[in-house]
Length: 269
Image (tube, rainbow, N blue to C red):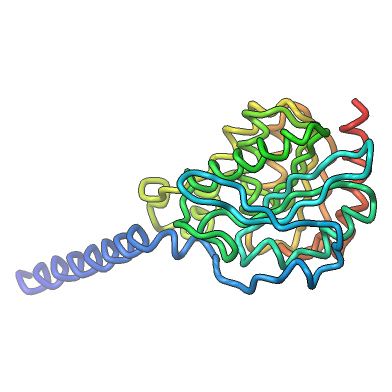
């Protein structure tokens, strides 16, 4: 019996040590695990945006780099908050469509992402997001906010503390810690995760009309996140759920056909 007890105690110690090691590794390396900040930066000259310009907006103790084009007379400007993967520049097809329909846009990399120097953190991303919004608002035209994936965090935060015409959330999370908890239910992510992006709290203070778009085939952020965000929005507009669409499919599946009418409704109110 004593031998069995010793074996069990040893086994418990080994399991506990292994679990503590996993938690410790996640804590120390959490931002490397959370963010996918590597990727190619495309030159503006290679995009079909001949009237757009490179911008460098001071933020914190550095700058964030992006692209800007003014809207056609009488049209609004879209402040676009990118997702987690790579650089904003790879989504130039979106900006080309915005411009083709008369919208202006500003898009950029948060600090620590490919086009902008610095260290990634939630505080830094929120500061960059608010700074770029204020830069855009100073242009004196109506502002629309579009947040995709990771960008649903800063875009919702900005909409909660600034006044825009509308907020579009594409594949949003209820919070970053919700997604982490769904992915790693055996780890105490709520206790150790630094950058939690509580969209579920910020959305309660968003007065702007909100459109949420998500796909049922999204394996990165489950569609239930988008459904719950929409349910919490005080000023709900459309909830577009595209059957079978994955996390990066909504542009090709026709999100612009939902975004454009939403923006028209939002600006007209």
